[in-house]
Image (cartoon, one colour):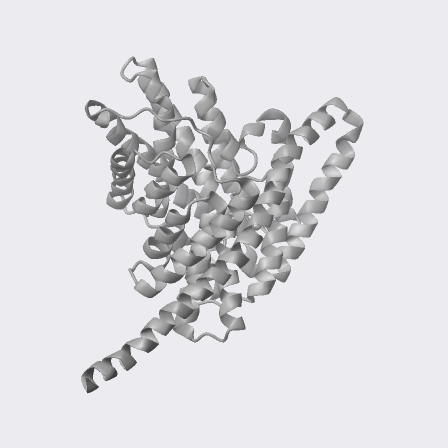
Length: 434
């Protein structure tokens, strides 16, 4: 009996800790859901009004001066935001990994305010940046804030920050499972029951909050994908290899863009002004590549684009993403990566269809699987990529081919010496601090 009492006493603190972590995860999920929900709502408004503004200016030439004046004002505000809060630049995931590793520190409230404002201005103005990286950082800062509010110790604080990051991804994509896996596979690279408890609580609650506003449907509006027959799995492996090769230049070009801006001598408003000026022109020439690009994915699936236009969209989106991210304004590369993968999958599928090798009904499947392949190669997180695409498209019966295409692209990156993009960005930031 005495041994039993001692064992119960020993177990109770562990159970209390898990219960406390679970409760903290729920609070973090609520906080993250509200912040990321606001972020998504403002960006959704920009997706609606931006094309209307371009059309209005096109029909009213005298409005060109106020039009350009807006972009100049946006550049000034973005420069002020970046100067006042350097930790809000870029996607925020490298900074998050730096905080978790103990190499960096941030003021969580300041980052939330500046990231929210800067992200809406930059992405809303048409810069090719994603909401997902910023959403991850917003969630991580929410976790940090709750941890500080309740005076949690260091280890618990890291767990709560990580859980908040997963909740941010879950809220951004309506993908709670992907948010949890992202915490384990990408951020911590380990399995911890304590982390799993907090991550699940935060991700589920944050997703529930955003679904109250945006509905429970998937982010991409894609009809049922054709099931890939076993005899066509060769196309899937080929897609993974093709997109894996396409994606191998993403990381080097991203670092080249950041370094080129540093060497250019551009400072203050001149750095964001360059991509904003390009966005102002692209609105009339190639509006498809503006913003994050989630609507473009829907268009690629629904429309029959010519091969030449698909190549133009891929190259345009790639180059414009490099130009935008290199400027250092708040905004991520998560969604642009997925769009590039979708465009790469569309090019691959179009080539096979033109050659008479693949039936046309598999084209949407190639587009969706291309997203998983590109993400898996660049981020080197094939499990997260596969689950994320399933949740974003609402297609849950393609697990086997998704894993195959993701692993094929991952192996291309691994064999050729590719590193996870967020690790490379973190290393660059740490070197710049020295």
